[in-house]
Length: 197
Image (tube, rainbow, N blue to C red):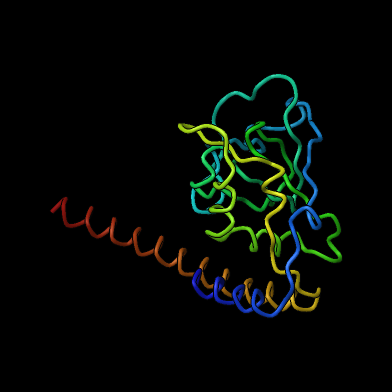
């Protein structure tokens, strides 16, 4: 299914002109006091999963003071070791550590944040980020360079068509993952039953 999503995006890429991220995204620097969020709402580079696989829950004490504020629909990018492909489309409001960059669509009516997220989740984007990093052991991306990355700029109708098709594929992925989890549980039951005998 992931390959099908990539194929859908490639079709858009061939059919439309391109624009830089700076024309469709804004870099968010707003801050929030950590007293106003829970650990489950805090995202760090360590809680972001590789290969755009989402996040895991933060399980430590929150830092004191303020952190970068993000909101549902924002795009979060780990700016440490970009080659690990840690990119997440926020599905809740919260705060994040300074090494997580927060981007927001300049105008959802013209460019859906979800569409931009899918445009950024390709190897080409992370390769582009790695072209201009600081440091060797823990390379960090350059914000200005990142904003120069170009993505296809389809119409709202094309974006909706693409996102509707992606939603169907994501539903298939979720269903397959649930089935695998169920089968793993059944396997465990069978093993326990027969190992006790």
